[in-house]
Image 1 (cartoon, one colour):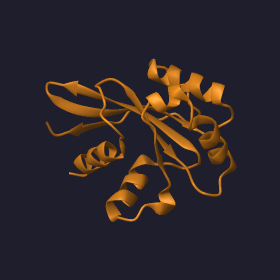
Image 2 (cartoon, rainbow, N blue to C red):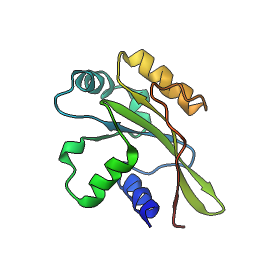
Image 3 (cartoon, rainbow, N blue to C red):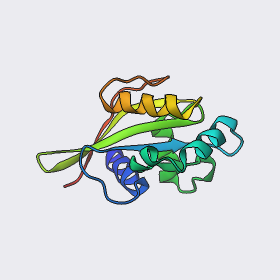
Length: 138
């Protein structure tokens, strides 16, 4: 049951429609975080970054128990954290797959290169993560 909830929350976080296999990003940030502000300022107008349908989430602004449970489930330990994921359709069911994550931020060039490596199947992020498969109803 909880996996359905998490899948539903991920879908709600996504902006716009998503083609299967495209990567997407959840950018976990907090207000008093210098690297978070730097990342936001450098990435907000970048076409490549925006093509990944990024969604910015501040855990301090999560209100419902489900949103707080989602944050706990994602195991974000430092800020900024970028979770790179994609949707796959298998036998008519959609799965959300966490490809990897990046913790921290230094430069836009380094960030974009690391996301591209993760998207290509190399978990190059600092902090890495196991792949998470979450099935969403047909």
